[in-house]
Length: 134
Image (tube, rainbow, N blue to C red; front, top):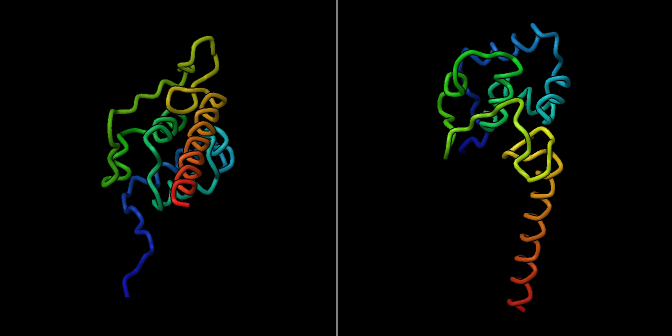
């Protein structure tokens, strides 16, 4: 029988993330709020269950002042595509918006709008497939 359990990353540097968070007297919930993710995700990153997306890693690195690169902590997880450079003071790319950037160069409001639009397009595509198959 083949095991379907996800293998954890075994980098000795993963403990540095937990130590850095605890040195700053931050709980998992505090860290999750700052990263705008769930506490379960933070715990999973710290324990090596998953590697964070490059944007989340960049925010963690700034918040916790971590040395090294993402590949030092999760050696087999290298970012795909263009390198991600996150400026903690970056603003939303949308015209006339002065909110702090959250993800993909957009503030939280515009990022959610983008996701809703994407979901709506996908629902329309599925709806059209069902209509054409009938």
